Length: 388
Image 1 (cartoon, rainbow, N blue to C red):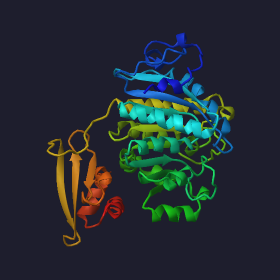
Image 2 (image 1 turned 120 degrees about the horizontal axis):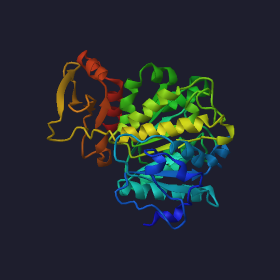
Image 3 (image 1 turned 90 degrees about the horizontal axis):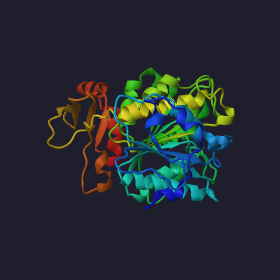
Image 4 (image 1 turned 180 degrees about the vertical axis):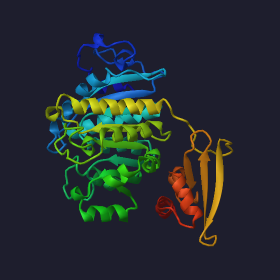
């Protein structure tokens, strides 16, 4: 399939001015029509999306991709051999459904080629199009949203940046296994939304919980297939380029740490940076932050350990912990490469084979200590309820 038909070249802004060893020098770019990058050996593909019609009060986020690129390309590359292509921008379709179709088609094709799509710009409703790519590939999905709000439970019929999770849940047949919201701010979230998240056994972590220990949040990110970032999750003083940005939120360096964890995850196969509105930005501060977030993702990606437990592997330690008078047994795995932890969820193959890949759950050493104290970790119990 030729995905080049979906793209426009990126806008020119002085491509010859980049210094040696900057990303602008080493990323292969779609600058001229008819000169689409060769995808052979490409590991990461940058995709701009000029679509903001369903981004409520933030429609000008459709102009964000090229502004972010200008900051991204001026960053120095890390000490690894990069194979990254910038495919250009997917323009807004005649109807917004046309944009969703194009985005879904492109992401699905890249995933099939084992190329990691990094989506830049546009509204967070595009997360729905990203999800559809997995559905068409018949892959179950763990979705992580980093957002000040939880975009679920709202009554509007039309798909928007504030209710896209509703549309994912309503889609049939459904391939969403888990959804996690990180860094939500309680005064922006209704109690009915929180109750619905609990009823669905979905994870949700308040801003304070995330900031209290980023390391404890790392397993949530490590378990994701796709991650959707709303720039409003970052506090106004660090990222003013968004209509909904608030005095409170993640600090820029905290967001970069979370995105580095995302790059490091062997399981993650797509990520989107949404809701950047250049018309509200101050001295391109938000564009620079998003560019640095992408830099940290790339750095994590090129430092992946490929250490998830596998059968007959000798690269991890295995611990069996019996709980509640042997009613439950939890098997823990610790990687010898990275010291990261996983725990095994009992799974019956004859029940639903499409969920088989979810029976190994990333966790922390603290989860192992809980089990040793005869307490079932919340993450284990929640996943057990879904699988059994």
